[in-house]
Amino acid sequence: MKIGIVCYPTFGGSGVVATELGKALALKGHKVHFITYSQPARLDLFSENLYYHEVFIPTYPLFQYPPYELALASKMVDIVRFEKLDLLHVHYAIPHASAAFMAKQILKTKGISIPVITTLHGTDITLVGKDASFEPVVTFSINQSDGVTAVSDSLRTETFEYFDIEKDIEVIPNFINLDKFKRQRKEHFRMAIAPTEEKLLVHTSNFRAVKRVEDVIRIFAKVRQQIPSKLLLVGDGPDRPKMEKLCRQLQICQDVRFLGKLDAVEEVLSIADLFLMPSEKESFGLAALEAMACEVPVVSTNAGGIPELNVDGETGFTSPVGAIDEMVEKALYILNDENLPRFKANALRRATDFDVNKIVPLYENFYQKTINIQ
Ligand code: GMT
Image (cartoon, rainbow, N blue to C red; front, side, top):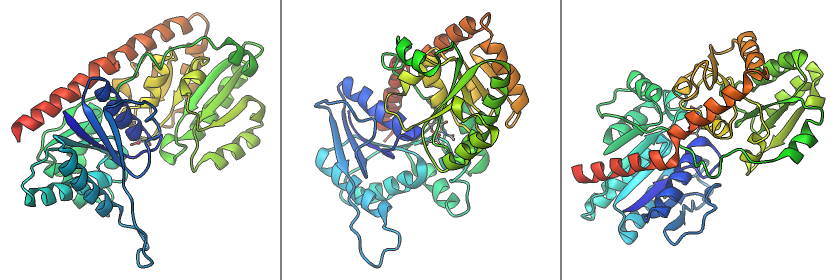
C-alpha cells in the first residue's frame, strides 16, 4: 500500500506512535509518506520505502496565526495526487482530521477518492477536543473519516460520551518495539547514579499539568524517607521550573536528577526499579509500556486506559488520582527485594502483548477493510 501519515513530529506519544507505525510498515514493504511541519523526532531509519514531505507555511504580516491547517490540506492534496496514495492516516484529531476532510473534498473535484483514517490519541478527545472552541469541528471530522481508531477501550468510550459520534471506533492499542526497548546491561551507569545500591525510580513525560509531576516528587520524597533511593526525571515541559523549586523546598535535590529530553530513554529505563505515572488523564500510557518492556514495574493512577496496560497487583499497582499515600505504600511494597523480581517479570510479560509485530497487522487489516468499503 501507499500510505500518507500525518502527525505531530515531536516526542509526544501520538507522534511517536505514528512514526514507529510508519517505520514498521515501511519494513514490511509499504510505501510510507510522512506529511508534517518538520522531520519526525523518531524518524531515524533510512529506508527506500520512507518519504518525508515538509509542510511549508508562508508568513504574511496579516497572519497573526499562520493557517497551518490550510497549508497541510494543500500538501495532502499534492502528495495524494502525485504519489498516488491509497490511504491517508492522520494521528491526533486536531487539526489533522479536519485538514484531511478538506483535502478529501478537493481531491473529489479532481476525480480522486482517498480514504481517510483518523486515530484518536487522548488529549485531542479528553482535554483539547472537548473545548467549545474545537468540539463542533472535532465531532464533524471524526464522523467524516472513513475509519476511526482509538488507542484504548477507555478512549473509545470517552469519545462516544463527549461527542455525538455516528461512526464505529476500532480499538488498536499502542505498541512497542521489543528489540529497542529491552533491559540492557548498564551497570556502570547505575553505579554512577546509585553508588550505594539505592533504588531507582523513574518518570518520563512532557511535564504538563495533566501528568501531575508534583505527585511524582511527593511520592518519591516519602519513599526516600523509608528506603535509600534516587529519582530520575526524563523529559521537559512547562511544569519543570515549578518541580525544581519543589525539590528545593523538600530538600531532596541531591537525590533527584532532571535529565531533560533524551533520545535513548531505554538506557535510563534499563537501570530503573520502578516507574511512576500519576497522571490525571492518560488514554493509554505509552511511557509506562516502554518502562514495562525494560522490566520496570509501574505505580500509576487508574485514569483512562492505564488499567488496560498496568494490571493491578501483577505488573504494578493502580490507585485513584491524587492518592499519594496509597501510591507510596504500593511503591514500597514493589521495591521490597522479595517482591521486585516477580513484578519485573510480570511487567515484561505484559509488554509482549503489545509487541509491534502483533499490533501493526491490526492497522494493516483496518487499512484494507477501509479501502475495500470505499
Ligand atoms: O501524553 C501526552 O500528553 C502526549 C499525547 C500525544 O498525543 O502526543 O499522548 C497521548 O497519546 C499517546 C499515544 O497514543 C498515549 O499513550 C498517551 O496516553 C496519550 N496521553 C494522554 O492521554 C494524556
